[in-house]
Image 1 (cartoon, rainbow, N blue to C red):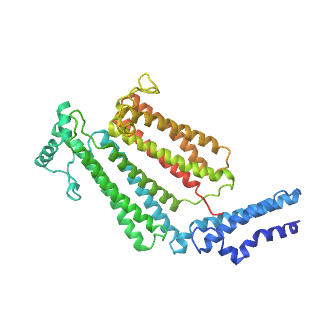
Image 2: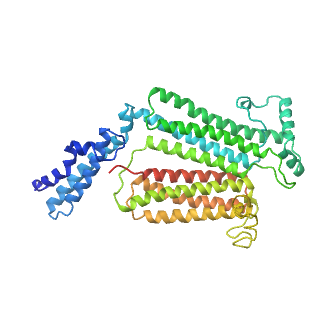
Image 3: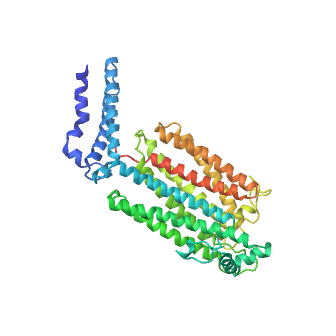
Length: 444
């Protein structure tokens, strides 16, 4: 019986024996890498054998077909596993070294995560303008004596925020010490993140543990870290300037705040993606038409979650969460009267507190609906186990995040709940990145 399969099997395996097919006309994980080419050809041969042997009607033929495909699939999966490490293998980078680099990148993403959360708490406690100077080294030391604390407090008193705060309630030296420490901790965390990236990056580079493809990315990461530090001070500087209107509240520019948060989210996403690429082994996905659509939609979801989080920066910058503490309506209306109160009209999107809150709450609701629809679409597609787990977690986290947002609004934005809501946006973005990473395109 098995002799019936020999011609089909020979035709299926023919690409592996063809030097031309093995080296030309295929997509590479790493150019001219035999491991990558072997993985590609194994993937193609498996599909060819499956197509050639399906439809056998004999009971013995079906049994032999099943056994042959199971054995070939095992070989194919083991070859694909070696293909994912081909970039490192081609440059003689050990698997353990790649894992170490991956854990380091995940650690850097965790540092950025912490910086974003700490920055959010700093904003919620109105601590961001307490340090009125930016000095790279001198800022690292807290005031030690009462005289030094008093000197810092006196400098703070000359800026608009203190004058506004003093008109609302008296600020003591003890109050100032708290907000100063919050801003100091945020700055020190940012510098610690830079050190946690730069020092290992130099070490790994010198050890030869960074692949050729990874080196330009490290340069981009370093540039983004430096840019993030610049944006932080550029944002604070906007809050130290006198406002033109007598009723203007001293606060940082919502545009600069959004830029600061957006660059942090971008850096976090890049670190997380790079870490996952080093640590996870790709799982074979079904070669169905829906997969290409699914990959595109997964990146679309990441973008929507990113934009929703970014709109939250405008809410925080304008204190827009405090003006309508009701849901689903805004007071007793679906569309408030002052939604388009500014001229020109485009300014309402970024400067009108009502419009900013309106946009953020409806972006959040739309995100949950889109994720739910995406989850429903994925139910009929045979995803790999990790991808299935990721999409289930994405749906659950989106519902939890929306619940946190609504609760924060109804309870008039308490600091602890608002910080948890901001943390939830990062967790949701993380799961979306994880899912998109699981669906990344593999060579055929």
